[in-house]
Image (cartoon, rainbow over all chains, first blue to last red; front, side, top):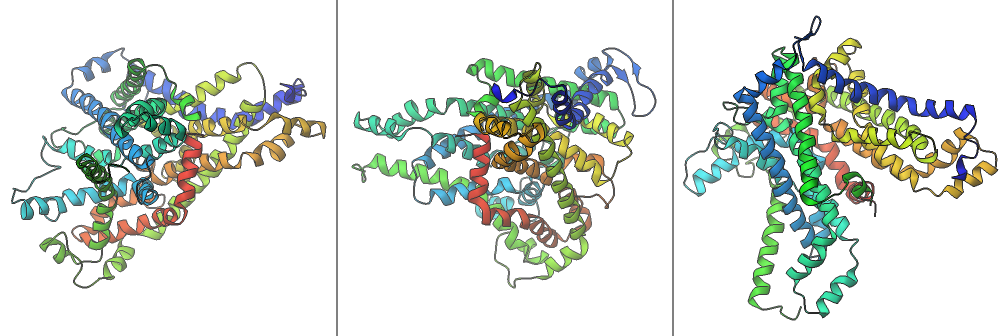
Length: 299
Length: 280
C-alpha cells in the first residue's frame, strides 16, 4: 500500500494514536470496563455501596436455583425464537411478494416500514390501550362482534407473554426492507430462464430467490434473535414482568434485582445474558452453516 | 399472465393480497385508531372503542400540551440525540480513517474487537453504566445521556464508516500525497468529504437509537430536567390518570417529528438504510 509511504515517520504514529484515542477511550469505558466489571461483580457480594466482597460462584448457584430466573431464561428463548423464526419468515414472504412488484408495492414498502420510525415506547403504549379491558379495541371486537368473554390479555399469565411478543413480531418492516433490497440484486435473467424452462412461481422462489437470499436471511435471523434477546421496553411497560413473573426476561430480572439493590446478583444475570446471547448466535451459525453477519452486511 | 383466470391463479392472488393487507393493517391500524381516539371524549371511548368522533375535539391536544411538559421533553431529546450523533460520527470517522487507510500491526485486531461490540446486549451493562455515570458525577444530566449514546453506537458506526472508507479508491489519496498533503489533510480534504454518505448512514443509526432510547434514560436520569420524550411517555399514565384520550393526543404529538420526517423523506431514509446495511 503505497498510500502509506509517509507513515513510517514517528509523527504519524502520534497522529494515528490521536485519531484513534477518542474511540478507544470511550470503547474501553463503555464496553471493556463494563464487561470485566460485570464479570467481577458477579462473583462478589455487593449492594452498590461499599467494597465488593469476593464470594466465588455463590450468586450463580443462587440464581440457577431461582425459579424466576428459569422463567426469564425460557421467555428469552421464546422471544429469540419468535423473532428469528416467525418475524423473519413473514418478512421474507412479504419481501418475495414485493419483489414481483405487485400493484402499489412501493407504497406498501413505505407503509410497512412506518412503525420502525416510531419508538417502541409509543407503540407499546398504543398496544396496551388496544389490549385494555375497558376500552381496548381487541376486547370490543371479541365481545361485540364475536360474542366472546372479555380477555385480560396482559393480566392472564397464560396469554400475557404471547400478547407482548405479538405486538413486536408483526412489525416486519426493517428486515423486509433488508431482504427486499438484497432480492433486487438477484439478476432478472435467472427468473426469465426459469420461466422459459417452465418453472412455476413457487419453484422460482424455492430454487432461485431463497438460495440467493440465504446469506441475508441468515444475517437477518441472527440479528432478529439478538434483538429478541435484548427486548426490554415492551415487557417493562406492559406487564413489568408479571403477572406472577409470566413475562419476565433476563433484562427485566436484572433491572428488578438492581432496583432491589442486589447489584452483584444483577451483574450475574448480566453475565448470563451476554453468555446466552453469544451461545444463541454461535448455535445459529453452527446449525445453518458458517456466515459472518458483519461481512454479510457488507456484501 | 397466460393462466390469468385459472383457479390456482385466483387463489394465489387471494393469498398474496391477504398477506399484504394483513401486514398493512398491522402497520397502520393501531396508529389510525390512536389518531381517531385522540379527537374523541373519554365518554365516547368508554361507549365504543371504534367510531369516528361525534365532534372532532381539539381540547385533548390543548390538555396534552398543558399536562405533559412536552416542550421540555422535546428539547432534551433533541439536544441529547443531536449531540450524541455529532460526537459519535466525528470520533468514529477519525478512528475509521486510521483503521481503513493506514497499515500497521494490530489494526485488524482493534477493528475486530471494537465491531464485535454489536454482539453485546447493552442492557447487561446497566449496573456498570449506572455506577460509572454516578462516579463521573453526571447522573441525571443530559451529558450522561450524550456520553452513553455516543459510546454505545461506536461499534455500529465504526463498522459502517470503516467499511465505507475502505471503498474509496487509493489513487485519490496518492495524488493528494504527491500534491503535498499530510496525514491530517488526507483525512480532512480527501477521505472525510468523500465518506459523506457513509457518515450519514452511521449518523442515522445513531440518531434512531438515541431518539428512541428508553432504558438508559430511565437508568441515568431521575428528574424532569433531563427527561427525554421516550421516558416522558412512561409518565403519561400517571400524569393523565384516566384522561385516556388526552394521553393519546400526547402520544400522537411525540410521534409527529419522526413520522413527519418519514413522510417527506421516506425514499431517502429507506435507500439510506439499505445502502449502509447491505451495500449493493
